[in-house]
Length: 222
Length: 246
Image (cartoon, rainbow over all chains, first blue to last red):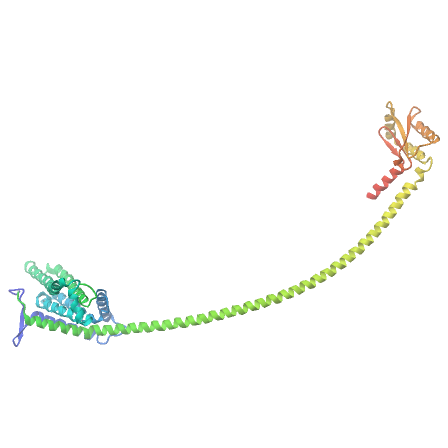
């Protein structure tokens, strides 16, 4: 166990650039996803096989959920928000593998995702509404709320980051403490609980990001 | 807690790579397949709709033909009914004509038979009237002078013992007697002959009276207290009428 559990664990350096464990874990996850999809979804057919059917169910569940939140055609937003949910789900669940630490248990990964969501909200808002209407929506319903609206853009991004980080980090801590105190078998229920927590956090992060984007494009109020 | 900015930057890039990766390997292929499937479904639905439209057109054509057929059938039925009505009327007229003819023949036959019967009846009535007149007017046994007396004497002589005894008993009552009734008043000699005949039969003390009754027409009647012996033309006529009645 590290001396400071909140500090990054540098595995190696590329020149002056330190490569942390969560970065490597992310690369592994990316590689696994790419290999899996290349194998099982190389040439998708109309008559789907079991794996393709399962993937279609997952994708259509995401699309349906996003359609309800965005109240419009969700496909332009599916690559970002669908990737968020799948990456977070896989990354959070990766902690159940022996020797693997979830990338979301350190602040950098949730911060990176929250930053991407933050800029995506503005990107989609400007793209859909245009500059003038998008900027004006910060002064609604009254110009007096402009500072609060701007502040809420920052705080909700921060809360998005902290929520994911806090949940996953605390779960890691609990597992680590229990393993120190009780050995190998006792943490198993908590590992199962971790599966639930990981999926719930992925869902919450994705839905909040969807709501923020929906507010940005004028589909809903955040 | 410190943020490692290199790691943050790596994770930003990594997630953008994940977005690109999943978009290329997962979302686009899935979307393409779903759209192809939806397009195939739409094409199938359109084909099905075309089939439905075609079926509806065929059904409409069938319905129209059926209506035309029904109309033609209705016209044929109407013509047939009209023709049948004409034939029926013609048959009825013919039958009525024949029936009238038969009826006229029957009436003529009945009239002829009735005339013949009436003639026969008239002849019979004439014969009967002739017979009755002969009986009434041509009855010498009671109309000629003394004939009624002879008839009465013969009738009394022919009475059975019981009947005669009844008459004697009736006459034995005090004040009882015999009344001789004739259509015309009898002369004294004739009355004497009646008295003599009756007294010979019932004794000299017999009270004998004489009366006239034009309704008798001719002949005479002997009226006892409880019996009448009639030898009159009126009695003969009554017998003749009873005989005719059967």
